[in-house]
Image (cartoon, rainbow, N blue to C red; front, side, top):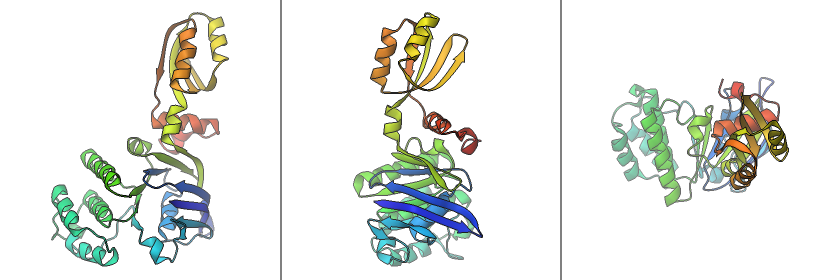
Length: 301
């Protein structure tokens, strides 16, 4: 488990991260979401032990990570702009990583290189941005660490490669104790892979929840009532988060379970109703609007 306890970090007097506290459970995919400048990269670097917090603590399996080789051995950090040695080839980087990570899987590394069409003898400096991202991800997977910290992992990858990487993550989690932590500015990239999502804004945690809990307890209902009186009566029974009206059609965001809400509307006088699942984007928009933030500008704008 990774724990961040009130992490704080400033640069030149400007706060980049302010008292960030999150818990990342094992064998879960944790998504860290926020706009550029929200503090995602700084938070990941403190978790990885690259940066020292001004205050607070980053713990990996109950060990402070900064300046701790035993804790760092359980992590592999992939920066937004992955670093490779000058004039190095993937083969050169494999030799280096094998000297740092005792369980580095060289056989799997070369198998992945072949599957992804990456030449082990070609200089990495000639690779495209997407190819460098692929190489960094493959190295991180083959390092066989317990935690893989990824900063904008899917940025620069085409849709086919994104899906391939997500599939490999899923397989690794089935085969061993593996926990990816993925920072991204795009919720849509994380929806089909993350178990838990934390939203950072202006250096602080705005929201941190399990996706399953969010999806089970927040529903979208489209309906047309038979009368104004029936509408008022039924809406009074609901824990409404948001109401939108287009003519006689109401689109409601409601807290509660799907079966519970279906029973309420089945008993009401309606001309039409449908209980629908919300996308991750819709869930976060609803949850943050309640807190007075316009996430559409923060993350989707």
